[in-house]
Structure formats: structure tokens, C-alpha cells
Image: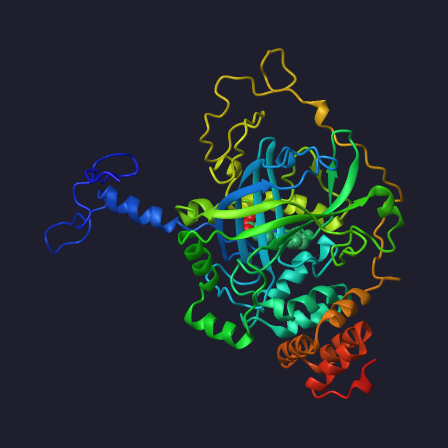
Length: 485
Ligand code: HEM
């Protein structure tokens, strides 16, 4: 930084005095013609933009993705082009339910949102640290999130709202079992895995489609916080995870994740016993083994938190040739929700901001809008088709293979004939005795303040997942398991 800079107004006019307002006399009132004071106060009033409706508290860092294994047989995406290929990334971690200043050590899923700045556009994997989610229809998302936020009357977080909703939504059980396990409070962001969670698609150069799940495996290993330590840190160091990530990168201890995929053919999907596009379920790793694709490393902290992390905009609709969406209806809901949130939260031209802009050439006929600052297409035509050579044209070689769909349009009740319980039960049985005791203890503590009718309804789900699971929680709540319906 040069040391002879002159302070100016935003308009560039030198400021003669930044310590004393203009007043009428030494002891008199302010004068309205002190435009430096007026501008300073007015700009300050506008410093805050709306926080993200969910995932408001977060931390971000830049890094690099390096391909270690060739998967070009599945995908023609440039990011997977060849072993050794490197692509710059930006990753934002977050908690979900708390406000922008909330504690990093809450029991909550953690967001794991990665932006790959590929040669053919930005690819965003907007995932979590859990492979599944609480609901499987986007119609339920606003209701679900209301239960994770504050009670409209008391303005307090409400276990009653959460368990009331969950007890009416048995599809949440798999994710609840993960959330209240030891993994529900990760020790910072470096010691947890990330998951794309949904089923996505990969398309190869021959135009063949496979279904895919993305897993980011922490090279640092898994480390979780005991609930008592998490509660202490929430009071003594609420920015614990931000501090840990920032300091590790400053020390040169660059955290890494191995990107792995599970792949399912379209024929296998057609034969799959349950819906392979249901985000409340996982795919068997025995049947669909993990394949390593590359390593993601975070190695640079942002210079300015607001510009680069708060204004970062991740959207599941950011896919690139060779990587696509799937019939997962939650994913489709998200394809609408994120870009819409960004237009509201950051502005219609949010994709021009340096953290969001593609790092490959991009050309389109979008023009104007608030805060347009990229030259706005200059004198080039702003419509298409047109007669001008050199103007951007559609490129049919990037078309995705057709996807066969069938069935009558209707609202199908996916709550009938459904297996809500086997995945949650299997996860419970995978745990050792200590982990089961911890899970049950965490649930008992969380359900303690909840009304008896809601407790009983929820116990009915636990017991169907595994009798020992339901009976353990019941006993912890002082309920005789034999009364559970
Ligand atoms: C953030 C909606 C499900 C992961 C957000 C935001 C919205 C939203 C509106 C704020 C975006 C912003 O202001 O920038 C929804 C809807 C969902 C859904 C409607 C269901 C239909 C999920 C699922 C996952 C997820 C299933 C993970 C698998 C995230 C993450 C962020 C986020 C990581 C924070 C991104 C960032 O760091 O900026 N979601 N969400 N969401 N969501 Fe979702």
C-alpha cells in the first residue's frame, strides 16, 4: 500500500477534514452542506445486504481441484479432462439455521458449497456434510425451515416446532439420525466430509448418461465436538470454525478433500429397488463403490469477507457440459430457488461480481439492470438471431441426450407404501454401543421440552427404525416403551 494516498469522497473529491463535522460556530449545530458527513452516514446505513435465508453464517476460502483419476468414460466435463488438470475453486462452509452472527458450534448440518471455475462455465456443488436431507419435496422446504428458525411469538428457537414437524414427516428420520449422532457437531470445517447429496448426471463424449453422487472425503479425517465443549465454545468463541479455517490456511496447513463418485447406469436405476432420485436415501457403497476422481485443496483466504464470501452466490443451476441434473424433485426446486435468492439478496447482476464471474469467456444478450458494471455489451447487438458475424450463437454440440419421461401429471402422494425406516435403522445398527448411547442421549436432551403427544408420535418412528432405538429414547424420556403405537 502506498503511504501518500489522499482520502476522497466516493466521487473522488479530496476530503480536507475527516475528524470534525462542519458546524455553525465552535459550539453550534451541524450544517447540511457537509456532504462528506452526509455521504459517510448514508453509505453506512446501506452496508448490510439481506442475510441468506438459510446458511447465513459461513466461512469461505479459495483453492484448487486437481484430477487424479480419469473418468472421461463417464463425463466430458472440462474439469475432469485429464489426470493432473487443475481448476480453481471457491468453497463456502456454513451452518444452516442460525443468523449471520450465530455460533459455529450449533448442532446443525453444515453447508459445503463449492464453485468450480471450469473452462466451460461455473459448476457449483451446493452440498452439505450429510449425504441425505430431511424432506424430499421442495414444497415442504419453507415449512421445514420455519421450524428451524424462531418461534413467531416468543422469538425463541423452538424444539416443539422442530419435533412437531419431524414427527409428521417420517422421511426426515434418516437425516435426524445423522444430525443427533456424534457427527452432528463437527470440530470446525476441516474435519468433516462434504456431499452433493442429490443424484446428478454425467454425460460422456458419446452422449451417454450415467447417474452420479458426489462425495468429498476429508483428508484431515473426521473430528467432532462433544456437546458440552460445543456449548462452552458457543459462549467463549462463537466464531470457532471461522477462526480454525482461516488460521490453518494462514499457517500453510491447507485442508484437502478427496472427490469421489458413485456411478449408476440408467439401466441400473430402472431396476433400483427404491427411488434413486430420493434425497432422503443413500446408494449402497457395496453395490456402487466410491471411485476417486481428484483432490480439492483450500490454500488462500479471501482478502475481503463481504466482497468475496457474503456476496458469493452458489446455485445448483450452475452446471456445465458433461455434468447435469436429475429427476430429483428437490434438486429441481433448488434450480429455481438459489438464482432467485441471489437476484433478491445481491442483485440481478450478481454474476458479474469477481467471486461469482466465470473465469472463461462468456457472451450473452442480457443487458442493463441495477449495478451493471461490465460495459454492458458496448455497441454489440443486444438481440438474437441477428445478421452480424462474430455475435454469440447457440452451440448444438452441447445439447444433453434426451431423457425419457412418462406418466400423467398429478400430485402423487409419496407418503403411501414408502419405506421411511430401513435406512435410519441400518445407520443406527452401524453405530457401536457408545455411539448409540450418545445418539439416544442427544435426542432425549433435545426432545425433553416437547409435548407428550409429539414425543409419542416421534417415538413411533424411532421404534419402527429399530426397537432398541425407540425404546432407548422412550426410557430416556421416562416413557414406558409399551405405550408407543
Ligand atoms: C442456501 C433454498 C435444500 C444446501 C440456500 C438458500 C436458499 C436455499 C434460498 C440461500 C441462497 C442465498 O441466499 O445465496 C433451498 C431449497 C431447498 C434447499 C428451496 C429444497 C428444495 C438444500 C439441500 C442442500 C442445501 C438439499 C444440501 C444438499 C445449501 C447450502 C447453502 C444453501 C450449502 C449455502 C450456500 C452458500 O454457502 O452460499 N438454500 N435449499 N440446500 N443451501 Fe439450500
